[in-house]
Amino acid sequence: MSQQQRANDVSIDAIPVDIANTQSGAVDPAEIPEEIQSITRGLASEQPPTNPLVVLKAARWWYIHGKGGTDSAFKWAIEWARHLATDTPSDVELFDEFLEYLVAVGLADEKAALR
Image (cartoon, rainbow, N blue to C red):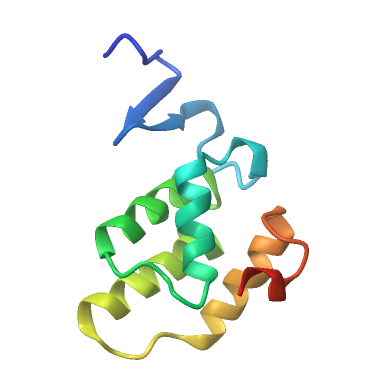
């Protein structure tokens, strides 16, 4: 373990993982690392990230800190990474769920503010 890590706060790719809050489903916007917020907002924007590794970094964070495999931000990040890897259309319904989730979590006041 590095000097920056404690037994209950592990870091992967310099993004902290709070072991006590893994898959709690309760995401506090103030506790979302700035890099993950930026990537997540980017996924909701008109010009989303085009690097699947960047997208998967956000997916991993949402999987760990959100609702696991059922987390809407995780599902959309995986869907977008799939789209990037296969060049096939993405699921519009998943995107809409993702935008609604970001509003519910508190990353935006309304869906339109994300686009």
